[in-house]
Each structure stands twice: as C-alpha cells, then as structure tokens.
Image (cartoon, rainbow, N blue to C red):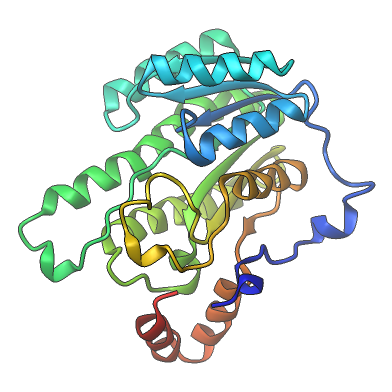
Length: 275
C-alpha cells in the first residue's frame, strides 16, 4: 500500500467546501475516548473550529489536562468521566449528558483493538466480549439514550469510528476488533435509513492505520504508512461539516470494488500483503 492509497476517498462534500460546508462555530460536540490519540486531537480540532467540546473518557486526570489545554488556546470545553463498557456506565453518562444538554454532534470514537489470530484465541472468548462491549454496545447505548431528543429537536449527527477492514471485507489477525466495528457500521447504516427526513444524520468513518500510542507496541506497524492523529481528526471534521454516509481510504474503496466481483480475490490480496 502506498501513502496515496491511505488518503481519504473523495465525497460530494469535497466539491462544496466553499459553499456547502456546515459551520461548526457554536456547535456542541461530544467526543468519546477523548483523553488521548485521535479523540484528543479531534477535541482540539473541533474547539479550534469554534465548537464547544465535551470530552468523555474513564480518567478524570487526563480529561482535565486536555480540557485545560483547550481552554488555554481559547476554546470552550468540559468533560464527563464514565465507563462505556458497562450498561450502568452508559446509563450514568447518558443521564449526565442529558442534564447538560444534548449535543449537536456525537463522535463515537472510544474503542479497543486486539491483534490476535482466531486460532490463538480459542480459549479467549472474553476478548470478543470485551471488544463488543466497548466498540459496539457502548456507542449503541449512547446513541439510544440521545437519539430521541435529537429527533424531537430536528437535527443532530452521530459519527461512528470503524476500520478499513469492515469496508474491504476481511481483516486477518483482527477478527474480534473487525467484527465489533462491523456491527457498529451496520447499526449505523440501518439507523441512517430509518432516520431519513428527520434531520439526524449518521456517518461512519472507516479509518486506515493511525499512528497512536495504541499501536506503538507492534513493531510490524513501524514501516507501514499511517495517518497521524491530527489527520484522522480532519476526517472527522469533514464528516461533521458535510455529513456523508461514509468516509473511507482509497485502498479500501478499491478492495470493496474487487470484492463485488470476487470476494476471494480481495481477501487473498489482504491476506498476502496485510495492508
């Protein structure tokens, strides 16, 4: 894979950047997993665009530090701590968010990744359960809790973070992670169809590899092209400004096209090179 293939595929929004982009100034944006990596970069980017950002993560100390940084640069920010991996944790977060005011945009970014072959996971069902809890049930619970108020208000957006492997069809060594993100992506697409005409949009971002602390322990990634956290944040801002149904890297779009003719060919290409 080349660096060019890593770039975001074009959407209709690219043709209307000058006249069709939505302003983010004054918008209330909630970001999960906002204490580091892509979430932190996204919080800074939205704040720089004039949005009021609400950060969500488990640790108050790190959230407080990011919030202070945003305020030091003239942005407006607050935060809530909570655990999106449990039903009680999601319920408590939803109640706190509702009391503060339902946001205009929710970025479901929090997640966990597990790199392990299925044959090495036959005694690790808990890996799949934990991954589904944070990557799927958490954002779904948050969506269910905030969606009615958005529909009643007549506008809103959920931006769901998925992975390129969902769009292309296969992701060797990441079955647990890819399956959880596939569930979230399918939920989002199905919900988007139901919400037609309500003013509430669903966007799914199928990110390529992103150079964050989460992938640092895996030496195999050192030589792979990857987005920076700031570049990933720009993809999310693009989704907020233009509300496309999906955003994905060019190589995933190519693999998806190949899959339409021969899924085995596409999967074989991924298995041999593992992009």
